Length: 282
Image (cartoon, rainbow, N blue to C red):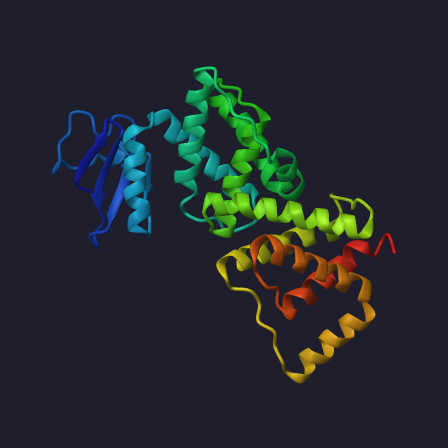
């Protein structure tokens, strides 16, 4: 591999055999070098290959201003997250997580820490991702001796969920608020608080995640008018009238707040999940 550009002493860019740009990191890999010099394979610690040219550009910009130790730390965090989270993660996670963690560490060093107003909701609706966030805080403390607040575990969890759903961070916060409001509607309707740790409730929250993603993307499930599907919908509406009415309350909330219509297909899926979370109580 031949150096194309020196990003800093520890990071350079090069091209693979097909001419695609790669980012190569390693302690001192760019020190005293210039474009056109060969890269010593013994110095290579990690190679980054982004399928998106935009992500590649953003990665170069980020690495140019980030301490090398923070990049190595972010790498380790992503490897740990990938090992423990059973969902496919967007390749952009290394960018968003490295940027956030590096900034959080620098803020901590300057005595400035942020509070996470959605922490309770994150702990409730994304428990697996939150636990991974807590694990990441432990790794940060072990590697750099920096102890961050649990609020940061919540922020890291959001980055993980964002990578799972392949959304933007601002959309992720909107989805979380959407879930929180829907749960409030449901618990007000049934006049009870549900077991947040039950399997049925977890499935309901996962459904709300993807429902919100479809809703905000304008890609809601269309109603299938085939005879078999119509019979099934009619059966659900007749046998689960109370839960269907709750689904309609959610649809009314969505219409009032987001000015979006909920299809009959979405109402039926909501009804089924609402029936499940009520089974034990019923």
